[in-house]
Length: 291
Image (tube, rainbow, N blue to C red; front, side):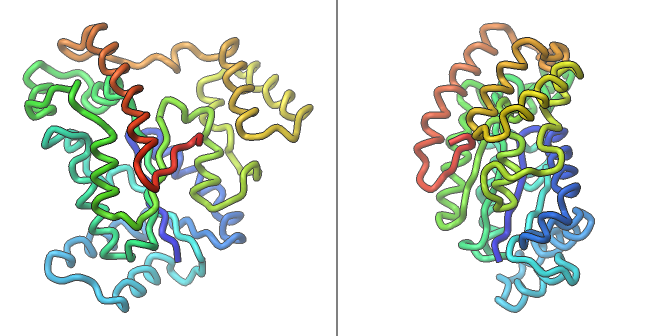
């Protein structure tokens, strides 16, 4: 069985993605993919992580854990989603890097499920908007405490992802940018479920609809109806074109109200993030959506 683990760098988006997965639960099950509700596995995983402190699991224990999560379902693929797989928001920065718990937690996942059987799907996000989103309004002291003395300009997602790859070299690793998510929402969910490109899913444009006017969505769907054979890349371009004219501007604005978070800081962090994507794409065995 392949175990798909999902987490991200935007907690509201993570919750919305899990809801979309659950809406497709019955259809995915017909294709061998199980999407259990989080109530079935979060406590089980917590207990399993605690047990790892005492001894590594036996192969039999792994199967018992999977059977308990599936709860009489049968599947070839199991999707587990948790916005906090790599820690709570307050743990997003530490040791001079983003999500320092990511690599050790993936090591634990490999012990629980077998390294070659797991694949992590995760979103990354520009630290210029990620850190304000995690912190909300805060004081200079609160920002310094959160960063733990780190210069935000030194934070690199490539360091985090390279750490995961080093910890679990045989595990799958699929990544996308939070900023692209409205255009690749359905692609990400299909990839998680192991479905072929272009397959229709319920809620495939949910995120797009949250940032586009009702009129824009009506015209967009009508356009798709007239062009039913568009590829994923062509659909992304069409979505981008419609957003040019019908985006809900307030839905696209990020709150960046942090002490010292000047336009220069935001510009520097954005440029560093965009350059870092080249390093991320070069990490062995990493799949970047869209490819």
